[in-house]
Length: 172
Image (cartoon, rainbow, N blue to C red; front, side, top):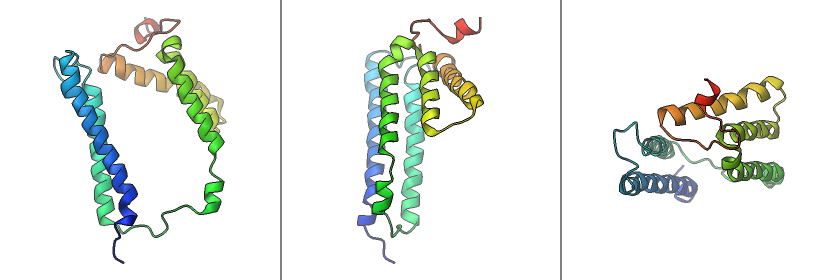
């Protein structure tokens, strides 16, 4: 079966978006952050490291998608059936978006650790988690692991919020 260009358009658009984001990230870290002197020093002690790491991972994903798109034939049934579109949970998507907007709006006020823990717990509830252990352990673990990465490894100061929570204040 010949490969049609039309069936590859969604993958090509997705690849274009990834490449544009990588380009914007590299411009930001190589030009704007250098001009602000935020990207000086070695690679692991400045604010340019994390965005460049993510851009590199995105480049690997884009390369994987491009290779897969080239090697495999297109799926003949690329569009969803009308019944599947009708069953798509738009209310759940709206609630998820509302949780993310609430997280962004209250991030500075509640602080990183509290807002991230509450957001992850709300998302677990939205996804239907039933274990009390999941609500108690997973949100706190996510907040601590990501907070450790940013505070210790990337040397980024996270918002403290009302209670002034940091890893140093918690583990003193």
